[in-house]
Length: 510
Ligand SMILES: Nc1nc2c(ncn2[C@@H]2O[C@H](COP(=O)(O)OP(=O)(O)OP(=O)(O)O)[C@@H](O)[C@H]2O)c(=O)[nH]1
Image (cartoon, rainbow, N blue to C red; front, side):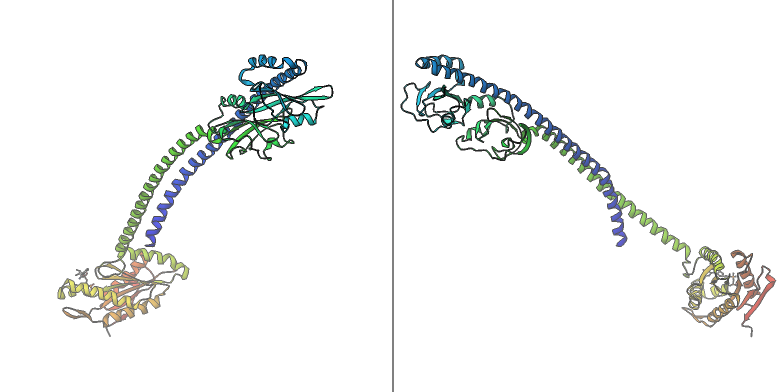
């Protein structure tokens, strides 16, 4: 279960690594690119807004100069040709068309004494108007006054009034008024493309808008709208022109505004662009790119899933193969009938123990065991009973041995015991113990109790010049001697390769 989870984790990590390698750079690059493009578009929009503001500044200044010239010209006529003033005005107005809504004269007391719109007017008191009071209260200041938008009592329209005082010497003789309809400015501004949500405005430093052209300008009540004091263009200490991103003082929307202050006229020109407009086309492109990147992401996710499944399957197969190898190896290493080590594995273990024996003073012993007259057992009881006897001999021996001893079947009815860290004398003792155990055991079979004896050859590793194969040869010689000496006995090799150097250590002869 744990291995199963580990395999899944490894496959998951491979899929995640793939996604990280592909998705992170892709989205990172896209994100940086989109950000960069937004910065460039914002910069271009700022430059557009400022260019428009410069153009409006020039336009407004020329209109102001133009209207002021007219105002001064009419004022001169008001003093010199008072009786002919009406005719002169009419002639002048023909030249100006819709640009001038009305020309009026106000008496020193504030009463309307002439209006180009209503020559036969009744008594109209204009003494409360800002422009009249500004001139009456400062008669020595011959300065153009540009009023807030006012709703004309005679004209019935919203207009901006350009006024100058009529003075003769030090004497205040009244005020000459030239009314420019607000539509003159706003209709002109509307022709300029500032986007669906953009805005162009002419604002007084008194925070009252003079003219606004936007999609909502119709809803603006010019009598009441007072722009926020905090708007940067009202801060006199600030630069006379600037660009800022923030909330619009007109409609509360986020916008990019360019302004220019006309100090002399007390006006500010504003060009306000909406990010909604100038980011629209790049926004569309961004959405297409994000859509494509999302589609690629889905493809990569599917691919990652495929990687996950493939890697998982591969790891599972590799694990199963490893397990199969392990099982096969175990099968090869173990004798199927008796459960003892197979001959090949027994010899491998002997090689290893021989190498390791150097660490414990070369104390290593080997016993070879051969069942006596085993052919007779087979012949008497049959081969299956012979198998039972083989298994039982192994079981009896293993029960007598230590955990670190190794017991193997070398072939037929021949076995071997590796005794690590065991000298010759101890090995002989162990061999004798095994011999006695087998001799005394009664093997229960379907054909009754069977008893067998074994012959053993014991050899121990020599301190120098010895090898595993020489050790086997010496043990085999000792076993041969045990057989020759009458069987059911233990013989020991004396310590060299010579078969004659074998000693019979135990016997049942007695
Ligand atoms: N039942 C059984 N018999 C086996 C097996 N392997 C070998 N044998 C038999 O073991 C017998 C060995 O006989 P021999 O080599 O003549 O030796 P022995 O009869 O034990 O005589 P000595 O070794 O000289 O005492 C043969 O009959 C083999 O068929 C096995 O796996 N099962």
